[in-house]
Image (tube, rainbow, N blue to C red):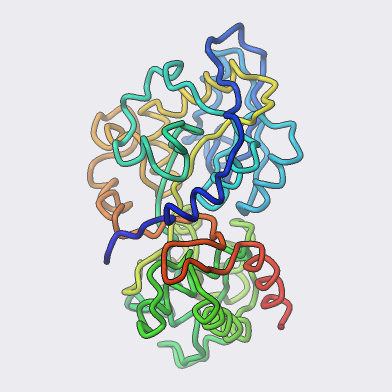
Length: 385
């Protein structure tokens, strides 16, 4: 699979036609006593779900900063919360991070105030989803693929294609997949349909699932309308999805390694795979609100977020990959080299990471369907239109 260009230079310049760059923190003062973070489920654990996984309690004791977390289930929800204000940090995926930069909702990060910056994976330090014009707008946190989760009692062997969630068929247990699969409740799922079409309909000429002309976009929507007839639920809450696999007869869906790991830990007949078409994925960045009320605690948390034992344990907990490669081998946490390999550390170039679609892109005449249409049209698909 070829490495994708996340955004054409023209598209990026249009999206990020910013005015003056916001002021950057130059020094840290006394800790303010708290830090308020918008985060994906499972990203900031204090042992409440599983006592083994806690990277908050010791930080609070050492820093004097109480960690308050607001869970968000989609990138759009994260953007909305950061637009509202009242938060210091967000663990933003690539389909939110550049929107936050363009909207001037986040501020540049002073990497000189983050001693562990030197330990960050070189592939992430200047990644386009948090670095604009040479300015860093975040600290890499965690990355990984969107996997196909499936029930091993139905699929004795791993499915080789995403067709099990996109096309009506009889599954290996002799029953239809209709009403037994799910899809992600977010407009970025259009990219999953586009990626599927890249493999199965190359004549469409799709070069990136985030850069779609009108014909390519229409084909993706048509595929999603077929999927609508099969879907029992559009999921966005990880725990509700897990309950659906346990109790509601759902047997296949796009998912995160987080759900897979928890269900397997419960002894459920669950596994995951990346089918032949490949996978979209997420590379998440801790970004700081332009009006953060607690900048010192925010910087202390961003430094803590790069600690090898947090990176290691979070990678094990979420089934993801650390932004600090040493976390795979230094033995300070639960992760080891085999675990990093299993989580796909070597597959970085194969993942088409989430990014925000824009109207001007690199292919053809530069005209692509903008994200606002993804939002409105996907609502229509979910509603049966």
